[in-house]
Length: 234
Image (tube, rainbow, N blue to C red; front, side, top):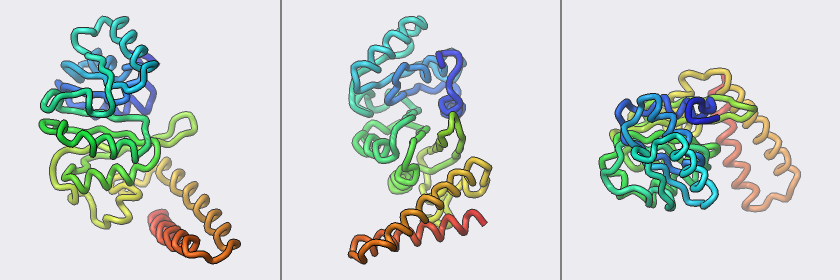
């Protein structure tokens, strides 16, 4: 992977960046995504944010090596701390857990003024990200699910608007994704068949243990989720 060729996962993220965007890539690692986005004509400038020193050094070296110091600013900071309100109009956050992505957005809400698009790729917990978007009037406009090197990833794209618009059955679609559920491609089916088998195994284990209050609550939660997924897979 380099500034000319991204992983399938990051290429999918890049494909949703609007042409001419001013980008903030949070947790930029080697800054491959902003470099690629500029060299392919997606963006006019970018901020690459990193909180850890090692990836920050890698990002700076990559930007210098690619000759893009004038258009990509590499900054150290936690989440959206690295940008000023109104500085960018598109934000990418990729390769983190859903809880962390939601926490970054929550902590940096004041930095989202003027941002037109969020492109978010949680490694796990996509439903947590969907819930945050729904609760803060960000409308999910597209989703992708893909498999790369044995791992399954979801990409969520949102713009300011009516957070409820894409949903018909909010509880089920927050978990499964309103667009992904409609499409039901092979990767989607593979993911949820695997999850269902995993939950059934946990459920069996809970049945073998004492009926504590927490075990009963966990079983009820699993029953609900299993029912939703089983209906979706029909």
